[in-house]
Length: 171
Image 1 (cartoon, one colour):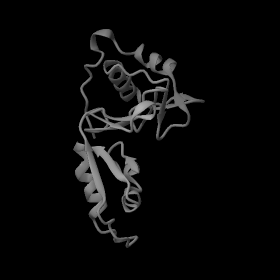
Image 2 (cartoon, rainbow, N blue to C red):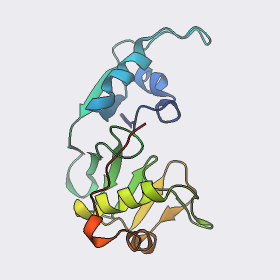
Image 3 (cartoon, rainbow, N blue to C red):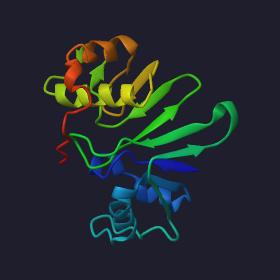
Image 4 (cartoon, rainbow, N blue to C red):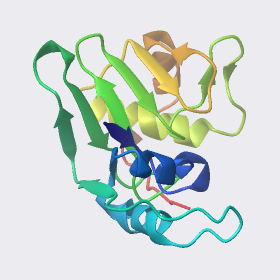
């Protein structure tokens, strides 16, 4: 019934037209809603498909709760970060499971991805500042999940005086 799009980059919005054509509500940050609407309505000249009729785009500012009771989930806009101007995460509070795209890079068998330290530090600090402590943190480009030990390891490299003060430079 819903498709949660983390951010506007093509590798994260792929399939948006198919979801829209099936009637799924497209959930995306308000900052990226225009990109989603454009992807849904522009003609596709290579594949020649038709834009989905009546696709629904639901912009998110802050948090959006889906469902109720113990099975409810939350979609949270992280906001500006070193990668983009906005990024949604999918949070399941009961079991403390989070799914994110391009905010934290970790692979279960090999550890942290080279060159992603700044992004990892940003997101570890963001989680702490927002009182979120995932038991499992999945990334759409990662294999396996990071747990509390991986987040704690990243936090060791954030000087206390500067935690949370890193300025985002989105691309």
